[in-house]
Length: 272
View 1 (cartoon, rainbow, N blue to C red):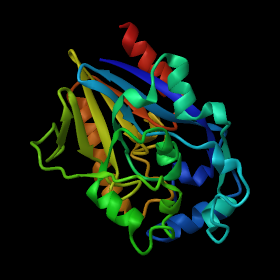
View 2: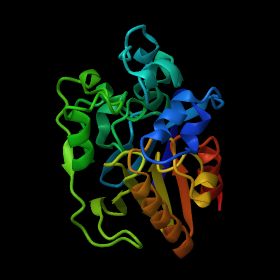
View 3: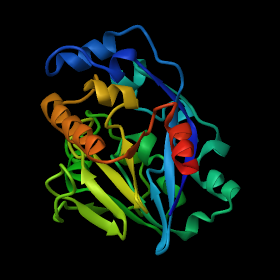
């Protein structure tokens, strides 16, 4: 199975978002108060060429985020703590066509979580089965979804996501899993959001972990850093511990969405 990295623009966030400070709700306050932004970080999605059909992990961002009023003005995070740069040609649909793929041929779209920089490109896939964890869907569409930074009112009207339940066997240090296709396993990696999931792709003897926002870089994962926007820092630490245990148990190519080195790390693993 070949995995293609696809960058759908960039995002800059507060430095405290990458590695937070303080207990509980004060972590988010510290992030909002931080005056220092990161460099522009990639917004990555991943196309898996599977024998049973194309699988896309995350749909990247939409260029509509550049339009005035796209984000809710009352939300302090969108107002003060995020800077997007996405052109129409950066969106996932044009990018797939540039690679020689038709978005209509994507069989599955798996969302690590439902923040806009992961779900913003869904409108390109009306014929695909869209998967997200049941907990993530409940939170994003619930009464406080918009307060937590989700934008369900921006999703396509036709969208009917398929809830993922982790009812499969243990996968290394993870007590449960969900097999999407042969060699493609969904893992519960709550932390950045309470319903976050990651995608493990076993290709021959190698394992690639498409990790979403389980951390902002590989180094932060190894350091056990907890981001500055999680509402469940204890759960975040537990998930990080499981990822660290998985990485110790076998060679793993760890690919979080916003790590500037993810593309080169995948390329290096492919050459080996």
